[in-house]
Length: 166
Image (cartoon, rainbow, N blue to C red; front, side, top):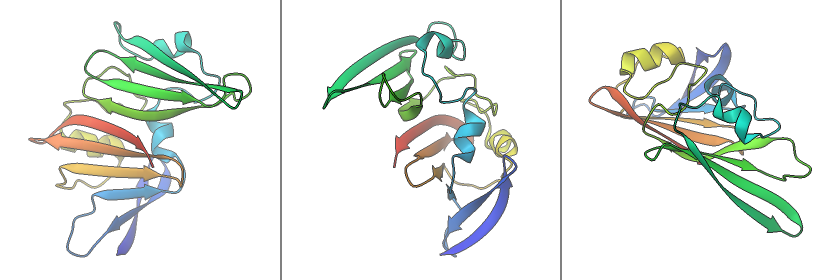
């Protein structure tokens, strides 16, 4: 496997590929992409404050759990076709929350980077500050415990973004 470097969001990222396969997988050691994608900090979870970054009509569902005396919760923002989930580790002591398993098929979130469903591959790669490639799926993985982002294209248009914990 060979490694090359490129510039994205003013930070270095490593691209991983084989000599016979186009570079369709990118690895960041830190959460460079997530910080450029989300229009808010993942600090001090508040549903009402987060809703301002979503389009009108998005609803929030939550699931609270209590394991060994620690309350945590998963909050799912959805428009009926897409969902973005956040995990709040401890509702009492932890002020941080985390982007969790998500499937984005509509423009329910106004992203900081301007990434939108149905944008062309060329527009996508310009906004990402990456060289264009012919991949139908581009994967960006971040950190050892971060998320993997899958940008899925059909007929040269971004149709879905899947976000999965690693």
